[in-house]
Image (tube, rainbow, N blue to C red; front, side, top):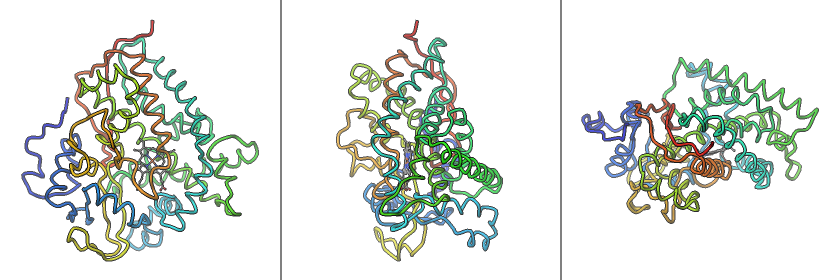
Length: 418
Ligand code: HEM
């Protein structure tokens, strides 16, 4: 098991600090010592390889998420100028997604979206989530072993996502495959020319899929987010069809890898901290605070990016207008100035306002749903699968540096199903 006891990673030897060091599997397996060095030595750090600032203290991450510009998608015209015209169809969709908009465009899209995704709709999904988790556990319980990722943490969010959108559940694995391609691009810094054609194809296929889903929902209205996006109206304002598709895609992608990582990283952390796992087994009322602590301690989405809105100074560093700034939520979450004993995993931690769902205007649109998925999954796993143990097999982290999670997580357990 890789517990992260890094003896001499390259960044310590070379003295160079860069988030590209996450490409080293050993660093990705435990990125927190790198984040700690950055936070302590150079909290507003110029990353020489990414040509971006990297911000690692809690207060600064909040500041960046609150005040900096999210409008960071290059326009199709700009991409053509720099010879990346093949990415234009992807950019055309991204420039309409709420994640990449500033006010007032963001405020408009988000207001319409909140109107469509009400607490009532989340509550309806809650009932389904327990059934879905139950049937996924039924499928493996008698085996005495499972791959937490492949058997549960992946199929749960893709099934929930299909229900949330209001598309046939049998299409869910296809939606998942498209989302994964899109998420690969969102989570990684480096432009990968080999990946681009696949992401482009996925975006084109998703667009066609949702165009036809819209036609179908218009003919035969079907409850779900797409229907709500199509009909949401505030003061005479409505989404265009392109906006419906772009924001359906971002909502679909936003809810998958992240939730998979929450469940996978959470089960792994509990297995690594048997005392906390025993405490939780003895008292299920600790499940909500456990999910918050997992989110803080092993964030499913580790960092995000913004652009400086104007020339400014942060901790004595001069940041030029439109320079990229990477806000590392995973580092802010372990800032000792904000969280006492931050490297300790404590399922009863109080005042746990972590940054894992972001902050301010772009605060995760699906946080309530993600929390329910995490809590219900944990509860059902604990209730029905006693004595978890990790299989002796090396852990492999996916090559997504931002949406950090495992490719598989094989565990065995004693089944309570007879
Ligand atoms: C554990 C699960 C999740 C985590 C850790 C997570 C994390 C995040 C983070 C960090 C942001 C802010 C990004 C930024 O400011 O640049 C965000 C935004 C967003 N999330 Fe989530 N998310 C999760 C689940 C979900 C789910 C289930 C949905 C879908 C219902 C969703 C949809 C979105 C959307 C649409 C945005 C963009 C909001 C905006 O720009 O206004 N997320 N999420």
